[in-house]
Image (tube, rainbow, N blue to C red):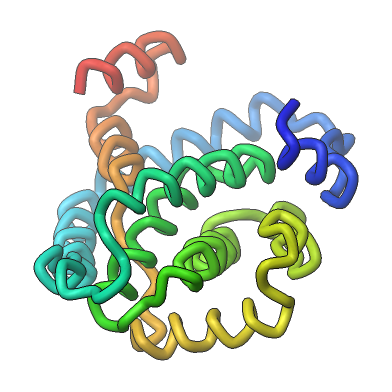
Length: 204
């Protein structure tokens, strides 16, 4: 267990939450209804995702103009965020959205080297609020501990407001998982088994 995971066990919410069993018939009906709606509005969904993607694309040339941030620093930040993401057991889409938020912000604002990790962790915090359950969203105390007290809680709050205002409060961005899920759902897979669905998604 890594140090981040140990800290998460100490400060995070309980990992095992008892849930009431969900009736299989009700689950099946909800799944079929969802499949029907996806197929009916699939074209509208694709158009909306395409439009959203065009509005939230990142211009790498703008990031090249950063005076302190270099591309070779990105993998180090990414490794840290992946470990953080795993420790908090967040959704896969949260990590994808986090990276898009980081890149969009860095394409519009000058980021100093000492604040690069702050931007990354705050972006993960914002993305988790957007994609995950409230119980999974990191607390300010947890973020501070994970960064070894390099930043205080107020700095995360200030950076959150700065990122959101820079992005005009536009957070949503279609991820690879969104596109794969849409492709699977729109392919009339309601009668297929889970294994068939997984095999088809891998082949995509």
